Every structure is written in structure tokens, then in C-alpha cells.
Length: 318
Image (spheres, rainbow, N blue to C red):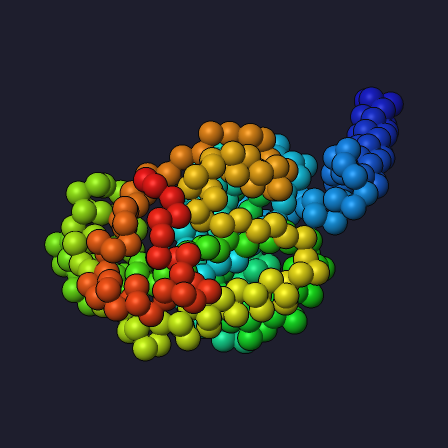
């Protein structure tokens, strides 16, 4: 009995020692394991293009299997009623492009340069969630930015930001500034009149809605007409000068309307796969300008013989 008890005690002791050793070894093994995240490999591109290729790491979600899919940053710089809304819907019809709209139309976001860069960081980090967001597998992300939304006032800091972050710019302007002015006046009128069942719409998706809005014919202040056209012209020229040091391309609304191969150039610029781009938006003002202005004879007389005479003629047919 004594020998049996002694053997049992020894067995329990030996087992406890073995269990402690196994536990210590396992813990040490776990402590020594270091989880390292494999860096994403840069795609096979020209050295000059490397700065424009990014691998964002959103805070609000994981990119999962798309974590190493490269992303391009872009911004569409334009002026109101220059076709930028239509242009952006075309881009957003691409499965890999997310253009998040006119974000800086909200004044607080452009109140100072800190607010601007904070907003841009959120967009380019893929943490800005909107109806246009493609999230995980986005290949190009950006926004639409009007020249009068803090862009020109803070151009030095913004140019530095764009160049540092590797943001590519798409300038979209309108050649015929008279057509743009008509669109501006008509849109301003509808903001108050709300012609579509008491609702203001800057863009429409049905021919009937477009027909209703096109019935309004604005009167143009002929006295200020040339001054106003020149002011817009100068603003556009100044913007091109300010942002000349960035990677950028320039498109005109009329050129894209007449030649859809221009969209191929846009996708090549963003380095995304070619796709057929579509928009549901319907053009509001069509045809001859003489049918769209209430005091056309006065406008005709004012611009005849000036540098803006070409605006009087149809520049595209739809």
C-alpha cells in the first residue's frame, strides 16, 4: 500500500510538471508569432506614374481581396452649367469609378484650408460614403469641384495637396459661354418657380421634364453681357494657370457631345479599363439659341462684330 501511494503521488507530480512545460512552450510560441502585413506590389508602370498609384486603407471598412488593387485619385474642376453633372454620371456608370459629386457646395467644408484637406483626405481614403461609392474595388476615386467653391481662393495650398497626394485633374469647360449663361439664368429661375410639380431640378431624366423647363426663355442683360462673358473667360484662364503644375487634362462639353471617343481619352487618362459609359440625364436646352432667349435681337446686336460673335451660331446639334 505504501509503495502504491508513493507511485500515485509521483505520477501526479510528474504529470503536473509536464503540463506546465507544455503550457509555457505554447504561450511562448504564440508570443513569438508576429503578424506582418505583406505590402502591395506596385503595378508594372512607368516610374513617372508611380506617384499617382495608391493603396488606400479605409477606416470604416476593409477592402478585403481588393486591398492590393491600385486606386487613382482625381478631381473634376469645372464651372456651373458646363455639363459637369452629365459628365460625372457618365463616369459613375463605370463599375470601377467613384465620383462623389459636388462635395464643396456645402460651405462649412470649404470654410478654411484645414476643412478642405480633411474632406479630401476622407474622399481619397475611400471613407466618403455616397451613392457613387464603389468601395472595395474602386480603381479611381474623386469628386466634382466648382471653381467658385474655395478652389481659386486657396489655389496654392490645393495645388500643393494635389501634387503631394498624386491627384490627377480633369478640367471640363464649355466653349459657348452664351449657352452656359442661358442655362444659368433658366436654372436660377426654376430654383424659385419650381416648375416641375413644385420641385426644383437642375437635371432631368425624361424628355417631358426637359420640355417643361425649356419653355422658360430668360432675358439677358445686354448691357452687362460682354463684361460677364469676359469675366467667366478670365476665371477659366486663371484656373488653368493656377493648376498648370498638376497632372491634368482639358475637355470641353461640346467636344464630348459631338465626339464620344473623347470618353475613351478620359478613361485612358484615369488608367481604368475601357467601358461603354451611359447617362440617364436628358438635355434641357436644344436647338437654335434664338428660340431660347426672350430678347434675342438685343443679344444679337450686342455680340455682332465682337470676339464673342461665334457664340451666336449653333456649335452642335442634338
